[in-house]
Image 1 (cartoon, one colour):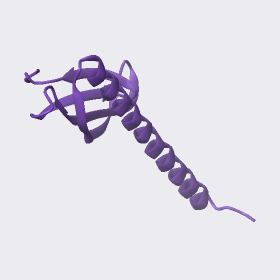
Image 2: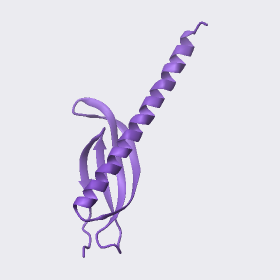
Image 3: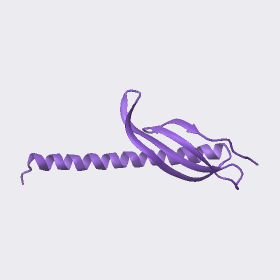
Image 4: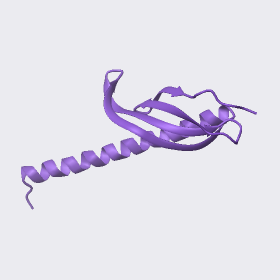
Length: 103
């Protein structure tokens, strides 16, 4: 069985797409775990988390995914607010929450 150069490039491309898919999935899982801990620590109710933007960028001299997550939370169980989590790879860069009501 012989492989042409095209076959090898195609296999490498498929492999790299799979690796990046799992990398973005790991980032999403890390963001979800961070937000659950953050909300528990600050006595907030986490309602939902959604990835809103993903792009390649440099962070500390390394190319990695720059990802933004929008999340809904509640401080009193009745009202909901939307926050923003920014990540560079698996690192949390910024968490922004608007002013919210608490009990």
